[in-house]
Length: 132
Image (tube, rainbow, N blue to C red; front, side):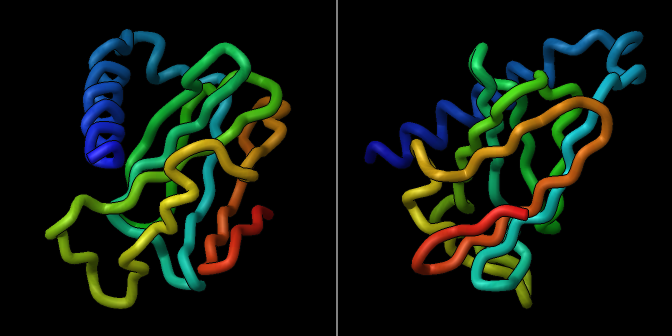
């Protein structure tokens, strides 16, 4: 039940974040964080990634391809939470189907964003994760 409530809250937050942009400034992205997220070596599909900076949520994005983009993240240490697909949603062929539950809350995933265009890959496994 707790996991379901977190997913619902994150979906609501995503809707709020995407609805609050100013179209004239959205096209003038100052920075960009891109990356690829995998589970057991396969692209993680149907997941939501949230980057959290020192001031709170820095950006939320979802992916159906295993690749993600977060525009204009704040400089500094970013931490990440990752939510898997909703129950009953079947992932595409050749994709990871389950995101380990430990990534839905505080975890070891972090990246020091220094500005501009940067890349951060997240490789999740059954026994832990590594970031590049």
